[in-house]
Image (cartoon, rainbow, N blue to C red; front, side, top):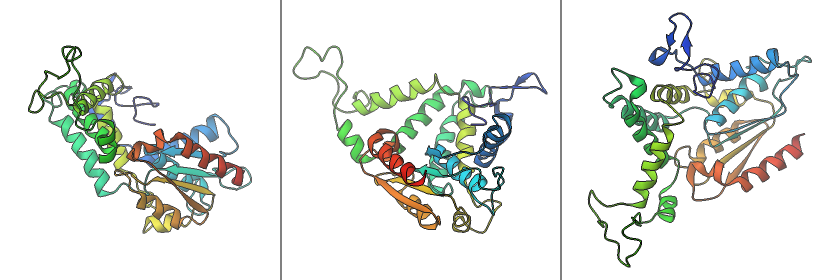
Length: 292
C-alpha cells in the first residue's frame, strides 16, 4: 500500500529532495492512487496478462472495489488485456462499503485526535506513541461487538500473582485500581502495535481510508459506478459488523450487474472476516469454481 510502513514508499521513507524522512509532509494518497500503482506494477513491471481474482477485506476490500472499477469496467476502467477485455477477471470485496461514510470517518478522526493530543505530536510526531497506543485501543473496540466483548471478558478481573494462591482475589473489584481483563487486553494491544506502526503513518493510512469513494471524480453516485462493473463479484458482509454494517455490502451486491452476496455469521463483528475462516474460505472456493 502506497504510504504504509509495509508499502513501497511512506512517511518514514527518505524524501530525495531533502535527504530527510517525509514525516508529516508525505503527500496525501487516495485508495485510487494505491490501486493504480499496483495495477501499473503488475501490468508493466511484472507483465502479467490479466488478474484472475482480487480478494480483500476491510481496507483490502476498498482496494478490491477500486480494482473492479479500474480493471473490471469497460466504461470506467483504464486497464485492459491485450484483447481489450477487462484486466481484472473477478473480485471478492469483504466487509467494506462503496465509500467511507461519516460513521467510519468519525471513528478514524477520533483515533487521529488521540495522536494529535500527544504532547510529542507538535515537536516530534514520530514519538507520539502514547497517542498511537490509545488510537489502537479505540480501533480494537470498533472491530468487535458488545456481545463479543461480553463473551470474551465479561466482568472478569485479571488475576495477579498474589491472587493465584487465594480463593478470593485481593485486587480492587472496582475503581481506578480495578484490573479488568478487558483493560489488560486493550493495553496489551495498544503497546504491541507500537512495534508495527508509527504515529505519522497511522494518521496517513486512516486518511487514505477516508478517501475511499468509488464515485469521486467518476459519476453522480456509487450506484452508477457499481452498475458499470461487468465482471463477476462475490460480496461478503458480516451480520454483526458495527464498523462496516451489512447494509453497505447489501448495497454493493444489489447494484453490481454480476454480483452476489454471502453473509458471514458470528459475534466477532468486523474481525469476523479474519476469524471466521471456514465460512469465508468456503464461499470463496464456491465462487471460484462457478466463475473459473
